[in-house]
Amino acid sequence: MRPADEALIVIDIQNDFCPGGALAVTGGDAIIPQVNALMAEFACVVLTQDWHPADHSSFAANHPGAEAFSMIQMPYGPQVLWPVHCVQGSSGAEFHADLLTNPAQLIVRKGFRTGIDSYSAFFENDHSTTTGLEGYLRARGVKVLTLVGLATDFCVAYSALDAARLGFSVTLLESACRAIDLNGTLAETKAKCLAAGVHWPG
Image (cartoon, rainbow, N blue to C red; front, side):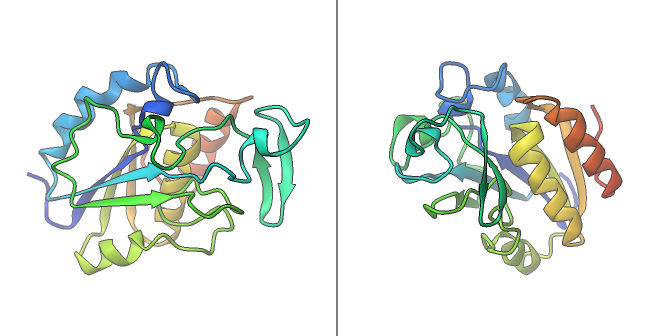
């Protein structure tokens, strides 16, 4: 068992991000056995869940004429327009059936505000609206985080960057993640994470 001040943060292993889903990450389900095994090592396990309303502003379908994966400017900065995914209450928003959920003491739902997307487990994309996860971890005395899940170059990396900015010691375990790699986003986010002090083993 890891020390009590360590936590495992499992990012968005949901049906829509796994093969067959609306925003499938290649090999997204292949990491689940490793993630399940890791949970047994940590006294503190947190799952995150993308949880969008159907009219969410990040969905290309809600911008007439816009194509999926195109970019627009939102009040909080540039935003990728995504295919409709992880709609609240839908089967796509459910955790993958093979993912163990019983070991988790907390599930953080994010992206539920219509007007703002949320990649990070800690903040919405305005980098100021919090999810409450930091306070939970502080209250439990957690100082060291291991992040796994989907997708490496978006929700996992954004969570890692925010965690490092908040002063946690952070490891992004790439072997237990899978990336979208949208026009070089994997290399870009890896460079940012390494520059921020995030540990990034394979």
